[in-house]
Image 1 (cartoon, rainbow, N blue to C red):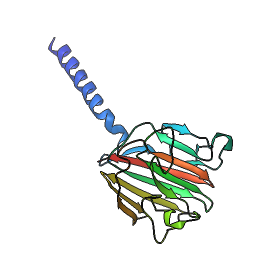
Image 2: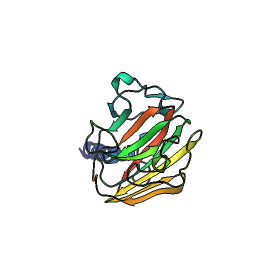
Image 3: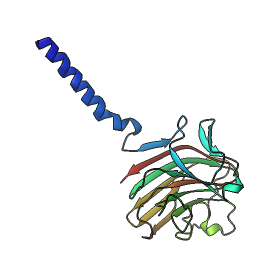
Image 4: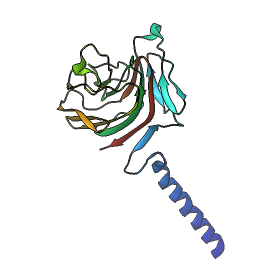
Amino acid sequence: MKRIYALVTASALGLAALHYSSPSSSQSEGGWVTLVDSGKMGDWDRVGDANWAMADGALGADKLFKEKGDYSYLVSKETYKDFQIRAEFWVDSEANSGIFIRCDTAKVIDAKACYEVNIFDKRPDPSYGTGAIVDVAKVDPMPKAAGKWNTYEITAQGSHLVVTLNGEKTADVNDAKHATGPFALQYGSGVVKFRKLQIKAL
């Protein structure tokens, strides 16, 4: 009887440990949750349509289906308030992309409904090009992202928004228009790839 009790107890403890540890399986050290990596596209809602797919260890697109809109977005299924995002991305010189955060709605994604952290080396007005938050925080001088792997670090804590590109701060602003919401990856033109995307709640 004691042996059966011991086995049942050990089994229960093992199941409890497994249940307890399972949430951390998607997290790396420090509370970072990995949404995209070399083997995982992530789970997204789509607004507009491009040929988003995994190829060569990265989530990317290079074609937009215009009949479904001028831009395509992969929108997170979760909403976020205070957080940090780390994103590794590669674009060509013709790319128009970005990461939209704290969107007011998951159905309409643009710079009015969200904060748009831009990736757009050829933007006609470079003050809101790569490294800027469109219509909120200008960048001067605008860095170039094309043709290499880059890392964005985006922090949103209360009204304080900070953007860092490859270790250099490009935007630091206080703005309270958007407090919480999903975030989205944009495809507009050129070649766009994301090989790693992580988020951490603050």
